Image (cartoon, rainbow, N blue to C red; front, side):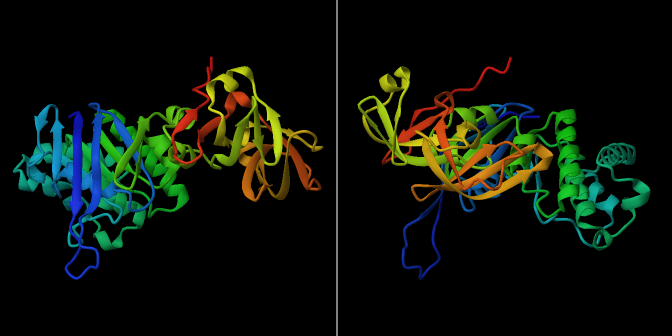
Length: 374
């Protein structure tokens, strides 16, 4: 296996002839990233942020315009894809339709002229770990397999090659919810068993948390932040990361620090001394996660929220009240037995869980820090 290091990777695209704006489009901008040997890093971000382009550059399917890519300290920036020992799994399976399941897995051994004994051993070991029985799938044509079966064969085809680096581009997004959950569990078991260095692209935040030892957040071709879920959740680098990580997302309200107090939602709230000293006077933005509010059923001196909806999540034994504060949508964690008859509630931020950001930019002025769990 291999550790991967990206150093200042930049990739530009030239618009097609006839496009009104002929300036190069930035696909990746000055990305530096290190992935330890055997580590899995999930990559999340909005559509078009460069997630798939990043995988292609690491695999050698596209070349960077600037920067270097190293596998175990070896520069592979201009190396052909087949020489890098990369396994790629795509959303659309990418199987050979004319071959049975066994031949899709074993094609690598034919090309590399491996012994029949080695081929048989590796196929059986990988197929059994992926839940692909030889009798069930190996002698069937690809077009007779279900979506879940096709993706299992596609993943197994990469695993059987014992790649140095595994690149997965939303590999289970086409599967139904139940199969997606079981398949991602099997993938994680495989990655841990073989210790394969992996970059895992997904739009699903829960999937990113489950699969990744760390999570990389991208936007507009840039790497905004990389860290564990707790680091991104409690110590976001900026407002974009703070609002992207967490479900429901962070509530953000315009506010102003004035005379040691915070004016927000038409209400003036006293600030603790450490916040008065640590925050600049003037306009800023207050961020409070749904669980970061103190809720008063009878609105008093706090912020008044007009409730529009209550959603109960019985599997999590919790409920969320949604409403408006000064025209801004706000989500608040409330008890499961929260009365639906309530139309207004009072809110007070728990200052130990409050986030503050610049009013004009997105810089984090103050974040809660990762809590002590033990």
